Amino acid sequence: MAFIEVENLTRHFGASVAALKSVSFSVEKGDWIAVMGPSGSGKSTLMNILGGLDSPSDGSVRVGGEEIGRLSATDLARFRAEKIGFVFQQFHLVPYLTALENVMLAQYFHSLAEESEASEALGRVGLGDRIHHLPSQLSGGEQQRVCVARALINQPNLILADEPTGNLDEVNEALVMSLFTELHRAGHTIVMVTHDPEIGRMAERRIELHHGKLSEVSVFPAYEEELIENLLKAVWHQQEDTGTEVSPSSALPEFAQNRATFLLMVQEELVHIDQDDMISFTPQGRRRAGNVIRRHRLSERLFYEMFAIPEDLLDANACKVEHSLSAEVTEKLCIFLKHPQTCPHGSPIPPGVCCPKR
Image (cartoon, rainbow, N blue to C red; front, side):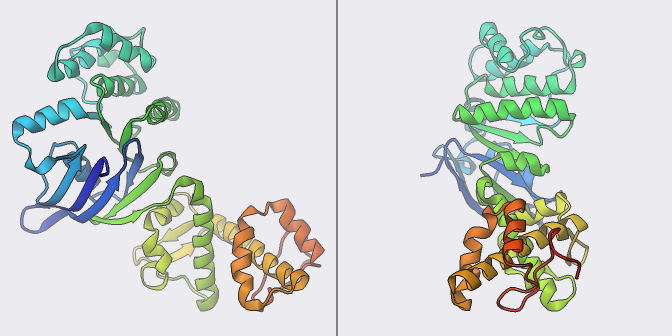
């Protein structure tokens, strides 16, 4: 059994609003999951249910073997105190309590407050010399580190973080994320809501919610660059065939299967999706897609001319090597092949810096 099991989770607000619609996924103990998606997609509702702050309308959620929807109010309070560590974007620190007292408050709701343990927890997040400061005397990054210490003080099985860097500058964001990286290495299970694609990449997996539905359980980040390049190729091929921008939802099955990765591509300004769901390259995206297509078609030409591989096998063989070709190797390959203008199938090869002007 997985550490978190979500099956057909649905959450209604009133008769007409469904914040979550039949969402299912699982999380293994020690995983780091990033939950992404546009505003209003159901991310915070999902986090609230996982943390026992809200209840499902239908479906089931199990955390550590306990089905949250069946717990009484008393048992839910115990569940939150003993098993969940919360880190919020807005910090939610008690303003008239010191950093030390804010952390001890979490201990109090769990069992007994221990000043030495709370002080040690603050020391772990780099605030050993700030324990007697009020929240108003701390920077945003320091306040968020107090929240991390507070989340850890009861040694929870699960850490839920909702946009933990949303109010931080780049320096404090890096500090806070380094803490989460350390927590993950120490074996903590982390589920984190974020809009930031770079933070999303730090997780082991990403899931995206779109209008309350689960759009994707993503690949591991180690394969992401290759996936992005394959998706750029899919858009290039479609536009090459039609001569126009395309609708990913109807014309590109790759889009529906990897919507979270497309979201990252939009945020990284590789592609643009307009209000009609039509997709087009940005200048940066077109350059990168052209480089991918160039490597692929040069690889096909090499296999065809040098190894006499049949045309119907060229694409599969080129896919195996194209992602490993550096820019330097690609240019040398083009020179070796005497700057071919088409692949063996007749499709144009985008020119490189080594090619004579056409």
